Length: 384
Image (cartoon, rainbow, N blue to C red; front, side):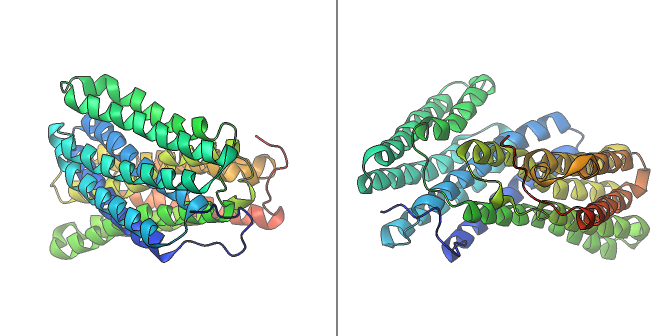
């Protein structure tokens, strides 16, 4: 296994990577479904906490595979078999999400996560075998870090259930620290354009959950004509929200900004909030539909905020992590923060919250397009 070149021309996502991503559709859908159930039952504390825990495992496993593939994807038989094992782990993780959410039983979900991590550890050991010097040391550090942290997860699983509450945060922090530890003296040859494309594709996957939710709204409107006047605006507003989210995210050529590990790591880690909030928009729309059809035990305000809060969070985190590096001047910088506030304010508009949030998001996109035509977006020269 040889490292790929950071300057390789025309580098793009492979069919195997796209197939791998499809497995995560199942996992994201499972997490979203449990969040919908918790919010609809009026238990946001449990739902949001469980969603953040589960989505971390989904997101981080995908991140680790993606960055490794960007540096060492040789697409031979052993690599494909290792990817197959990781795909199996994703499906086991997805199967364990309902138990983890509803019963705090993490054995199945952690088993799926460990399957993925073992396969990735073997990939790093194989990369180390083909490298020399600092590159070999970095690969071995990755493998060692993965082993140590996975031992921690196994120990946590064997401890009483109460240990999960205090053990998750330190182990999650240890997971996030492994790349910085491994690449302290040598940067793996990840490809900026490839990484940007891979994150963009995964963003489309999680936004697809919102499309599915809008479809549910339309189907519910057809099945329950009594609520037709409420459900169709939710469906239309949801579709506008997801398209605006797509437009906002893909407005900048982010690969031009990813020129160092520091920039790339902060950008990549920030996507936990970007991707998590994007997937939660779809869950919120389903909650709004259930409330409109009287299947949810929550108020209209709570159902509306289930849509507008994650949408506003998506907009503000996309600006903070992703888009602001290309904005020129105060006008461009303020578009997304102001748009996020308008979307959040729409949550207090009763049954019209979702369509008004869609309108606010559309106006945000229009303002951004107009300002970009006046002052084209370009990467900032300052390294921040």
